[in-house]
Length: 274
Image (cartoon, rainbow, N blue to C red):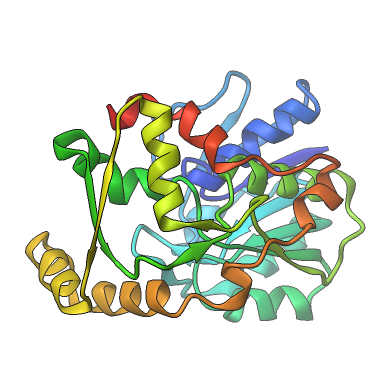
C-alpha cells in the first residue's frame, strides 16, 4: 500500500506522514509539495506538484492506494480551481480511499469525491494548538504579555499530531466512507488557563491583557493584517461555534488512546517561546 500526502510540508500533512511511519516504519509514502527541496523523513518520495494546477499532478497518483487531501490551495486557503479534474485523475489511477482536511468551507472537492467512487472520510479539526506559535510566540519572547480580545473564550484545541494519527489510521485501515469527524483535544481550555499552562512550560509567569474589539482591530491592523483576516478573527474568536469548545471523543475512539493535552504540546514547544 502506498500513500500520497498532499500539503505534505504543512502542519497537518507532515504529521500524517509521521503517524503513517509510526504505524508501519516500512510504509511507502509519496509527498506532494511545491518545494522540490522539502525536508522530509528518509524514504519518503517527493512529488513536486500543486493542487491548484492539475497539470502538475501527472503521475502523482500512479500506484497510490490512499490519499490525504487538503481542500485549499496555497498559504491563503484559496479554493481549488479544478477539484473535479483532481478527483478524476485520482480515480483513473486507481486510488481507493481518501481523507480530506477542511481548511476552508466545504466546497467542490468534497462534492466531487462524494459523487465519485473513492471511499472518503472528512476531517474537521477545531483550533490547532500549534496556532499558538503563530499568534503568541513573538509577544511572549519579547515581553511575556498576551494581548487579545474575548478573555472568556474557551477552546477544545487539538494537537496536530492527533489529526495526523486519525488520518493515518483511516487511510491505512479504511471503513469510514462518508463519515465526517470533528476532532478536538481532551479538554476545553479557557484562554487564561492556556496562558498559565504556557508559563509553566517555559518557567516564566505570563500576563494576559484583555483588549476591546476596537483595540484588537487597531493592534492587528498595525501588525499588517488585512481587513478580511481581522474580520475573520473577530468572528471566530468572539463567536466560537459549539463544536469548537466542546470535547469530542473522536480521537480516542478512532486511534485507541486519549488525545494529547495542551500541556503536552506546550512542553514539546517550550523553546519557541523562551
